[in-house]
Image (tube, rainbow, N blue to C red):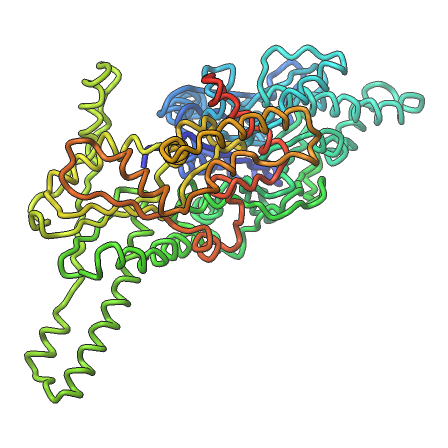
Length: 627
């Protein structure tokens, strides 16, 4: 499939022992920094536009820096960051500085570490949008560093709330809005503790009390109820408090590990298992609406910040975004492939002997394994029936047994991901011609005009890669029929919780449904949906409904799949092309613990999501290229 720009990756480490402890036990003051690097590299799949890290020192002397930050742009951002800070760290180790000097003065060696990998979900780019964000102050307890994997659907509302408090944000983005909101709540919490002690303690002692008694849970409870979206937000104060908060519906993923040495949070479970060499049972999922916090004294707490909503853990996370090395995700992806077998057999007329099975590299490989296992089970059943029938007829000879057992699936690596072509150097048709060569094929595996060719992909979203590359190169093998199988259902609706899929016209399924409506003289439905979407704009949250569902309602999944195949097939293609999609029922069977399927069903978990999809249709109808 064409790569999606999607939700980001986060990593957070809080050391619970003095820095000297890690030098003595693990041989390096940079132990935590190395772990942060690994956490980020292992989650590189989640963000390849930019990266950033932040470090807080708790024992720096007044007049010296205690909050360090480094950010970089581009696909090599992680490497660039660590290459930049590396020489200073090498110097620390080469000079064999005593622990107290390292604790007070060494840059990027501290007790708190934040790491972030960015994919833009708004189309905005540049260093101004790279996490972690930092709110500076002369009091350590008012410094706030923030990063997250999130997208808020009610940024306008949050912005108005910030402005009403008299603040003046310098950038209009959900990250800045959250930074200012949380900063305001943190300031109020500072004032609360200050007022408690101002008449009984000197100023310096009050500052120490504030750093010891800041209630981060109160700060989060003051801001989080106003947020509509999917999020995992991590933050740290300059005085040593940290938090990671997950949205109430569990849309975005978060996992943590803690022992007496460290507390670690990351976007994916197997990353923690690998980097810290721990068992799966040692990694906990951060529950929806909850925060894990560590205060300046190193006390760890799990707190409920928001009432838990409906389970809307993201299913696309399991299909595509997360690393397939997670034990559960691996089995789920296999099941997605296996469940497609009956429809595949139907489309090839049960002609296994004259069908070659393959996959589109690289993310569909696990679903392919599941598909092959399902096909093998079917073939084993056929072999058993043939043996029993031959036995009953008295025709079960040694040769007959060998012939039956010798029937095998024809499994080949047909499509090969070739090179990342520099298509920016050309325009128009020349650019499309270069895009057609992103994949190459293995010749000699398909019998000309006899074999069916079945290839599985994890999803079909825009369809541009199919049209420009995959179908063109597969047709060069001269199959009788090309069947492209999607292990996910048809992507019909935009996401607004962290993935750059916001324009309806981008979706091949949507374009197919619109084309069918117009072809069948049902264009009035398009106008009625537009009018209904306009009405929704003025209604309160509780009355919001996804009006765009009416666009798909007149058609079966098969009708839309057939139209998609027609629209996406290049005009000079000789082979017959068919598309197969996972059903919603199959998705829910394969991934029962992650029912968040708004991409496919249109069932958004929050009012903000419904407003987004209705606004997207209005923009489509009015031919406005806006999100």
